[in-house]
Image 1 (cartoon, rainbow, N blue to C red):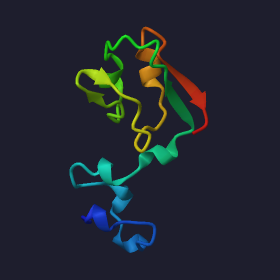
Image 2 (tube, helix red, strand yellow):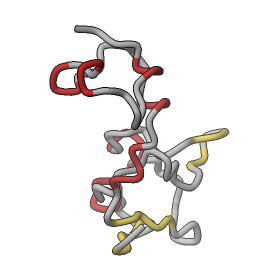
Image 3 (cartoon, helix red, strand yellow):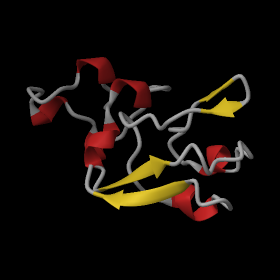
Length: 100
């Protein structure tokens, strides 16, 4: 069973959902604000950041935007708060805070 993911919402009957809620369309993460799942939140400490960009490729959800070779604050609509970026930052420029 394949569904148009743009038509799935909180009012969709269970019969119209994909088995296991599998997504078959590409680039669907933009459609879903998965940051709502977050229990811990990364905090970007700009004064400590050396722009090494080591955090960027380690983010499994691509939540660290880079503009003109400089990282920006997090995309909290999609950040799930896993903390991988904070563990990989050698300068302590990312710390995890409990809660959203």
